[in-house]
Image (cartoon, rainbow, N blue to C red; front, side, top):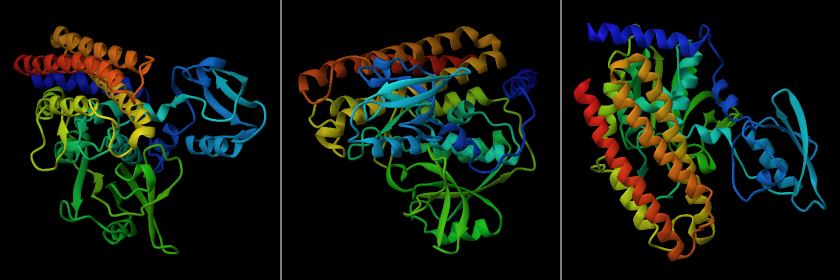
Length: 410
């Protein structure tokens, strides 16, 4: 009876979240929406803050050049470097267009794309909406484990979020989302474009991890077409409103299709919490650490200069900032998921409220770090940041106990 009740509640919640029937969309539509030059957060001590830009502002033009994507605004900013005097920026705020005058260079607004750091969840949402299935980013990020933990590795960029073990959860995730997910090739061997090309020529949809150009090389994304002219596979990945060519070896690839049998997510919360507990442990053979042990690695990194061995001294601050904001985004996603689970499982509202409060406490401490004047580069300052992060780690440890309590009650 419990499963039937919870299943009914979640099914009702799907209707509430959807608001209207889901329609089939073109591949890449979710990516195009997320890659709009909309401001998610105003960073402290930046032009955006000083001239009065606000969260939710949508940039329409920069230096009289219309911009529709984050890539376009970055290119417009690069072209404006060296300009004399101030330049105009036009934003849409609500239903009004407002013009601001700024110096050439970055505005200092964190784009809304940074609100969705789970590249696997975003890829799956795009695929599912293409199939006409209900898809919610926060549910998918929770089911893949990405909104409940972060991963770190000693020799990798400190701002790097590869999705960790999320690929291992795809089979479980498929059972709850109405998908069939079939691996291409063997794990860990790397794939060229041939296997993906053959599936695309058959009209199939391919989920891809790795192989994307530049800073997106380790993200998840979707392959959409094969171009015979240049022999490249093209597709979309995080923060890409335009198709990108796969230029490197792919780590993993999966053929995705709608499943014949859709399973109601009657054990959704239990599945997510079980994964959250698993992800507090170190990875056995990949070198990546997750959960509490990833925090240990992060704290150790703050006791060294440079903080990031990949970025070096000059870029370590930007690396650290990206890591902090990505963690905030994950925690906010986890809380949105948990709020929806309160509707599906109201008898657990007390424990869920405690879990949400702990996540909110972590968000508060991280926002304090993001807006503080303490900067990387000096061990004294970095150790001050480490003290705050050690308190975050203690809250994470408390969350483990709450997950266990929820599972017992469930």
